[in-house]
Length: 167
Image 1 (cartoon, rainbow, N blue to C red):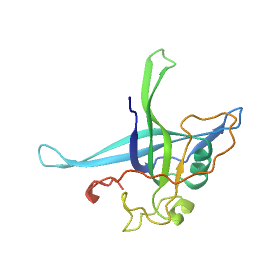
Image 2 (cartoon, helix red, strand yellow):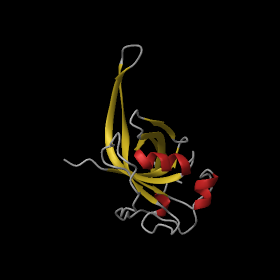
Image 3 (cartoon, rainbow, N blue to C red):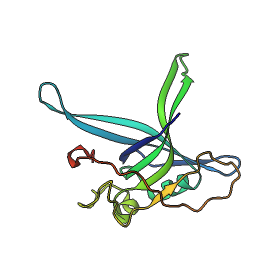
Image 4 (cartoon, rainbow, N blue to C red):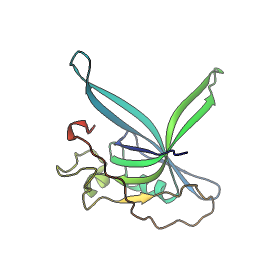
């Protein structure tokens, strides 16, 4: 079976990092994506989707260091179903993404300045700007493994109309 999801959007909050007893970093945040479409009546509408993200290891530390609320990112990973019982006894669930690869979109100034500025005009998914950086997370977090050197990844080209970009 194959479980892979690719999302591009803006972070909805700063990355929160905590560490396991073995010293591995775990980072949590969320991403907002949107799509614009015309309704049956011809009215222009926008649908926004919020998805929780979890980073592991060095990727979590890098995300915490360089990303802020509003930062533009491209992530790919595995879709996960989280289930729990609420305090009132009701069963709850939500989908989240365990991030395997992270690509920061936009300029270095945006990453250092909080990511609130717009991306350069020539910045697209299929032709990343030279200052973009990619990081890969291990597929399974190793509790006591030494941090690995981050390596660039080759993401598939995405054929997308600029009018469909959510930011």
